Image (cartoon, each protein chain N blue to C red):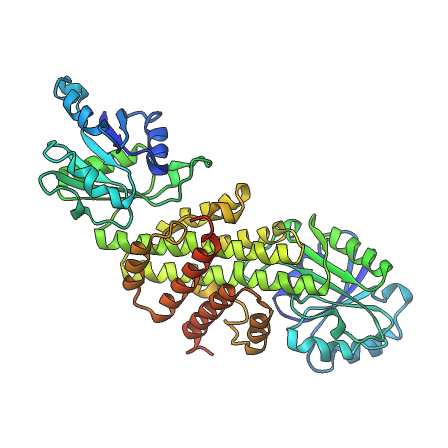
Length: 251
Length: 251
């Protein structure tokens, strides 16, 4: 039984609390707010707890900017401390403690239930025993566990900004273009789904189609002229330029 | 029974041939190449056909640039002529003929089978009877039929370039970032799928997350510095700028 104390009240913490509380093999001792005196009160009280009620690790699931100060409150707690951020190095945690990372690579919002079994969890630790513990903990909720370094995790987080945040904004542009012309956005959804299914069988490099892929300058110019929003024009130009560059040797 | 003669040998024609040949209610008379003398030979031969072997319509599924010249060969054929392009106006077809549009809004490649039942088909016609015929034809293969004007179709095609071509290129960038850092691209796929599933229940405007959505300039600067490819930097900047602009009033 792995005993966990979770810190934070955001989306990641909310989902981890949700899944850990119904997972066999994990005992969620406490979910603490990172604000006010919640942590110091807990640490004080914990001194009187039985050995069985001590956590094996603290999971800090707070905003990137707060990780340092929150983790300082746990300094010298003689426990493993991990955070759940994609972009923050492990070194930000106090070096008096055993340190690690437990990063679920997914977009979380309270409105949507997540099937954790398919959520990749990226772990990192300084000590072999801690790595083993984090793997064991991850295995209670997912089939997909990766050991990644802080540098790799940083790149993954950047890639996630592209494939999640940027893709979603592109959907938003599609939605606006539909609204402007009074066609329902739903008409684009089968295309959006097929675009994703396609990369299951073809690498995106090979799946690429469209005017930029064909170097069809006439259509590119016509579509740029068609766009009214200055920011959408800039996006059209930047992505088109990048596609042209990617395939220029083939053309 | 609707009788169709299909012209073209590209991906759209290939898929239409595939589906029409197994659809009850449609008789595919012929699939003609747009090259050489195939069309003129067919028209000559057709003069001797029985009334029952005459097509109700010609579907021209060729590249945008070839639609005009191909359709000129069918001039005065006294039949309905439609093309399948998203970006070309109906007016390009010869005005001596009855004209229309039969535009399946999907990405087609010969390697991938398509479930036509969910492919939206956009139709347009000048005459009510022809519109009825095109609806009837579309209904034999899909549940999703839309009447759209040439102007609406042009915007839909532009939106399709965003949500399909541009999104796929963003997946390609994610793939490259993974390769550079020796993590498997597969690790991003659950996130990619969830990004699409999310817009089933939330409009993209509300589903937006990430550093630009939070106006988190520190992370934006750090990620821009992290990107090595000049074109990827430009895409990062353009989309970030557009997200900041979209939500600036809320921040």
